[in-house]
Image 1 (cartoon, rainbow, N blue to C red):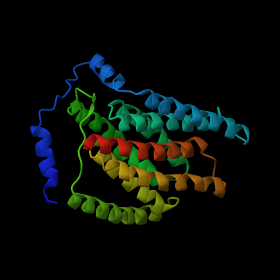
Image 2: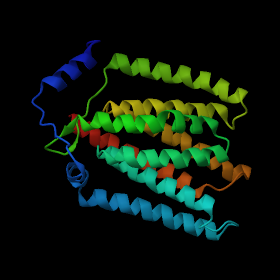
Image 3: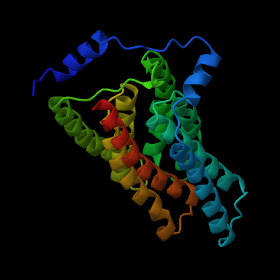
Length: 261
């Protein structure tokens, strides 16, 4: 494989007679967001939201804290907006960045409560501004036929570079979080780096972003299971959110791969 495959892909992407959609106003955006949905995808969206809501309420009824307490409502809202953002990302819809921004604000607040400072840092310093930037980037690359963003793939060389950078950055950030007294610093650091890199790849429309999200979701499930056993709280909605993310990431990776061909 050529070392310049990425550049070639970009050049081909620019040269192809793509029918990019011209987003001019709110009506265009609404049309783009509501086009191309299948019945299974709609059921997956609403089914996931209902499942998380019901299980959160049932779990809270068996515990000491009612589900409608401020903390539980915040966790549930974060989980729901996160699920919507995940599915919209898989569908390559602009709304992913709107719901992603809301989720980032709520998730940062919840993570601070559990002293997951790396999670707070990535949401406040990286995810919030990148969600705004990401929407602007996707606006320029929407296929008018499928009403989805045009997708790309990485070269082998860049895959190796990204994997190496993720490992080095995770160790370095883990040392920093350990120094400032964060909980589970190296796990927290790894999820932080994976999330940042995954979002950058998502904004740049690379299908490999889903591989990073799958890895991140597996680690994050473990990260949010720990408070149950340590008696540090019961973030049911957040844990269910990550389980939903994992399933969704696997499904959407396969979907993006089919689109690339």
